[in-house]
Length: 378
Image 1 (cartoon, rainbow, N blue to C red):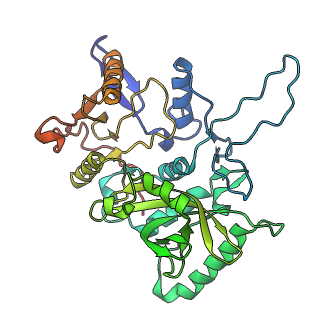
Image 2: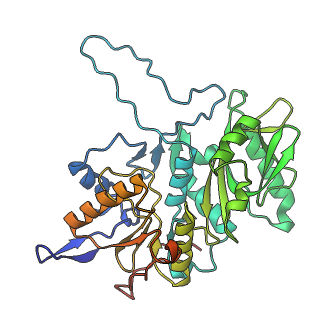
Image 3: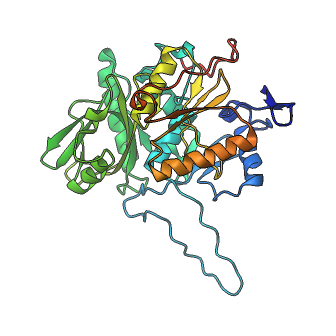
């Protein structure tokens, strides 16, 4: 909690730091759910695809099929007569939403200086798989449907491979023996041509393990990166491309990718969408700042969507595209109206200003040099 000063009314108030809701207990007035309830009282939002349950688990409503013949969007089958209302359809999110949510829950979209040098693939694997135990997708625990390559250990490769094969057999076939799709998360190592289409190789996985995409799936995936260029070539030096896929086993024992999505991260595993976000994330890490990069999985209408939130200065950080872009101009206008109304502090980087927007404005000074560190990942 922090003491906030409202300049218009010249009053002080106790408030919860933004983007800290998940760090509070479920029954705390400053928890994630309390934040949602508080915002929803004034601003109606669509039915959420993410439901926090009383037992501490989370139900995630995934639109992507994980069974072989499941429709992408569940159809309403109940009969409606007279004045009876149709049951409301819950909002759904796709693979990128699921990966973003898992990443957020594992805490990898936040940073504190004590994490420097401690974020490696082993930690990524550990925390993503831990959080997968707490998320329910399609009526089952996510960890029971998910495979992620174990960290490479030269002296344990035989056991790791045995566990992988056992996991594949459990994930790719149901209790009745019928084939089904499994979810795969990993770091993309390379794309390779195969007789069946474009193949995906993952870091830490055996070199002969290839997940392949047909032309349709590959084309759809590459369009996410603006064309047919190799997605890895669009990353900065040392960056990673996290990938999530639904995979099924073919009759010839190949692993076919039905759908795929990706998330770009820096070498410190901070997610980013644009080159400017990457620049700012790296600078914040280098300057030992405490911050969160919001994933914006489900945003409340009328509330600004900052690119980062700087915890040690308690300030939202925004990056706006060139004002000649009508969408960017509209977003800027709406956000400025919100901040003028609420008097909340914010930092702005308008692209195109100052050396063509390459360099961001000076960072806000830390308001509290003894800021409480974010959750430590070790």
